[in-house]
Length: 153
Ligand SMILES: CC(C)(COP(=O)(O)OP(=O)(O)OC[C@H]1O[C@@H](n2cnc3c(N)ncnc32)[C@H](O)[C@@H]1OP(=O)(O)O)[C@@H](O)C(=O)NCCC(=O)NCCS
Image (cartoon, rainbow, N blue to C red):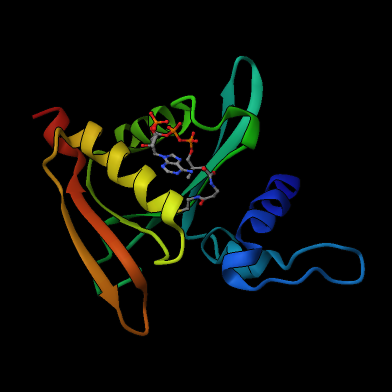
């Protein structure tokens, strides 16, 4: 997991302005706050029998006082497996694991993630989700909200 986090941090280094330290390692805490504080569930994903990424789901909103909602804290697909629907399938598995309300946040600068999550959530919910654009001290970028129980009725 630690190595995957380094690759994830590398992908985010341009957006977040991250530098490596003298050992060429990125600071984990800057990208993985939620997992490190223990208030989250972490999953590895596999494709064709190979490690292909990870997903980290936090419990409780990062945007407001709501301890019940699930939050996609971090989500990563290794480059070899991108644009093959791996992300969409992993997202659906993650939402199925926690049939509750969800919030998904993307940084305003992360155009690929915004396009990805809109598609993944649209497919998962059949279009039954809301989106707001946050712009405050908690977050700056799109936030999708939906209830995963609509899949099971
Ligand atoms: C964002 C990310 C998770 C997408 O994973 P993926 O497995 O490539 O996504 P999928 O193949 O399931 O993509 C499904 C759809 O999302 C959209 N999408 C995915 N990547 C995209 C990109 N780079 N640019 C534009 N749209 C994109 C497309 O509509 C795509 O469908 P298409 O390939 O038929 O056009 C992956 O690029 C990644 O790990 N990025 C770095 C980390 C990151 O930004 N994580 C998200 C944090 S919120």
